[in-house]
Image 1 (cartoon, rainbow, N blue to C red):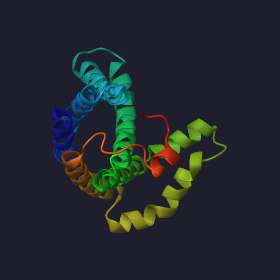
Image 2 (cartoon, rainbow, N blue to C red):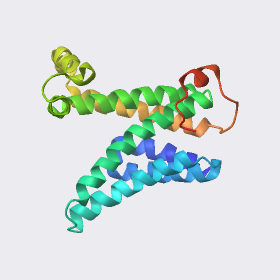
Image 3 (cartoon, rainbow, N blue to C red):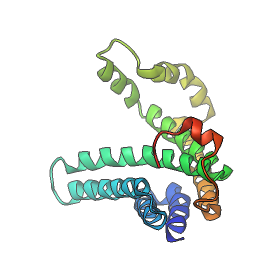
Image 4 (cartoon, one colour):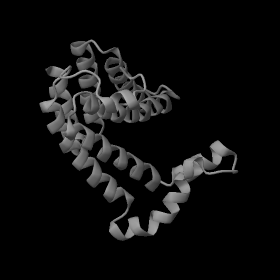
Length: 193
């Protein structure tokens, strides 16, 4: 119960609390993992908490290099938490959590592509030969449309806010173990359980 409440509050506060919401949601995943005896949830929550601690220690504690490691952990935490929201939504057949995962994933993608670092990262990863998954190519094609709508940053904030509301609604109505594996879950299972 505490895990669900922390997750609902953490995701609802995400558009306003920034890094504070990462602490609340990470604590929520850690708590939900302990409550439901699902170590994957707990490990993802622990990664989020360690990421926040690393960034704070590196930035304010003067420990060189720790901020970068913490930042990488936090980025991994954000991606894994979106995947967990999707998997929990499928497992419990919770439409609000599925919608939350979709909106949060699009917000994360818009924030990353809008930052301009995706192109540099794709070039570095491929040695300048290819565009990883066509992300930079799609970003260049969509950039004028995204700018007309309000820019990648504005869209990312909008999608994150919508995803946060759906996540809060979904976690408040979430009941772990409502059903067994659904057909959709069996097809798309990736061993997250």
